Image 1: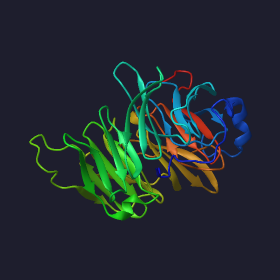
Image 2: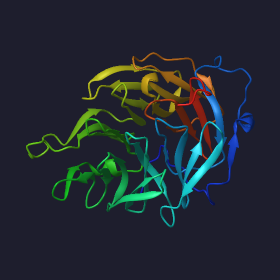
Image 3: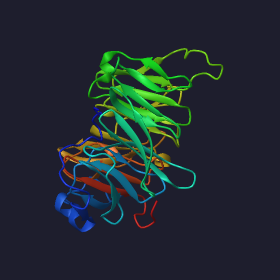
Length: 336
């Protein structure tokens, strides 16, 4: 399995119990002089000295779940602690995706090799396991896994009534920098990357059983990062120093510059989006509203990087080469 960069950070040894640092140690990573802006709604809460293999943040919780070498760990972003771990596979584990059920149960999708397993974190129950030959990356709905694969050829595949449906893609879409964003409500997969055009793939087959009419529909040119906001129902893209938004059908809505080179992009529910940017050789987080309004940059530390966010936008995880820095959006004492 080759999971695309963006939330993929490799090279950790050991289990989940090492490396957590509460907010008190956060200042050792931060130059507080000459801040870019007054403290705003993005508030640092904790830091973890760990490299991670993928991250899932539930909307209704104060924790995230990350993959490490041989373990999948639950991390409390408010308290700077690691609460539980699961040994899903006997080796490398990567957190691909996740979702929450109506009764608040959190299901985390863990991958290893060409195998994807759904794990209910509260009960340690390992549910459905899928063998997906040629797996590169995947997203999940409540009843199936939708995967980007390179075997027998490059394309998007998902379980259907008889076997699997498949939408072919050019081979470049199975490269190491391809990114996925999934609209679960409409069953639409967005696929983009710096070397390929942004495309939209309707996953579900029409109710009359007919063949999918359009396959992959081109929406825009290459992108550095993409994210789906299920609250505003916007597809967000980052390219160089600009962010653009598209509606659920791929119609352009707006574009804006956050004020620096973009290294990471995340959807933030009703808050819109957040970008990690480089400004004057420093790094900052910037909020961008669902109408394209750009907030003031807030400097966080020396290295910008990829971002993980929950669907409701109450937290931000900034993923560095050897650590995770957590931020609360709004009042950090209010919880999610």
